[in-house]
Image (cartoon, rainbow, N blue to C red):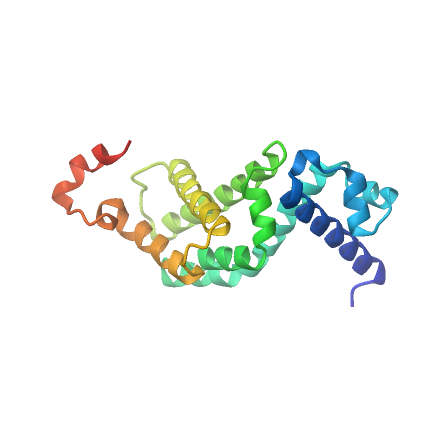
Length: 208
């Protein structure tokens, strides 16, 4: 059983995080004050500063809380490693974003100075590169493209799609998006656009 003090800390931080997200979506990060956050969360200023240095620290704290949620991805990651590329970890990310849409909107919009978005992006990139590296080592294969490049390209693709998805009623479910990303990863852009291998040399000419 968790001590009562731990539960109080979690409740306080959750209230502050929720207050910040609501205020940012209402008026933008720069217009929000610590006083407004504490008033909405119904906590004292001293309590706020006992947990966070400033509102920027609180915003980054939200990203770190999301990072802790990655623990629930581990079963899917292990299964993916055992069965090949299933896309399950990506599906969990989109499902989590669906449940916590306002939080993801604040982060993905780059509110504040963009530090929270950079931390979120770096977190995903780091885990992606580690997963790609582990997979190549497990299968004893040599990457055709440096894995740091692969991880950054994959992360940029995921962040872009995730941003579009949480900001709009796209009509695509988390499962739909996961299936599309999985197929794109497995078969590539040439296949995805309906081209044939013989079209591949000129495929990049379509890019702006």
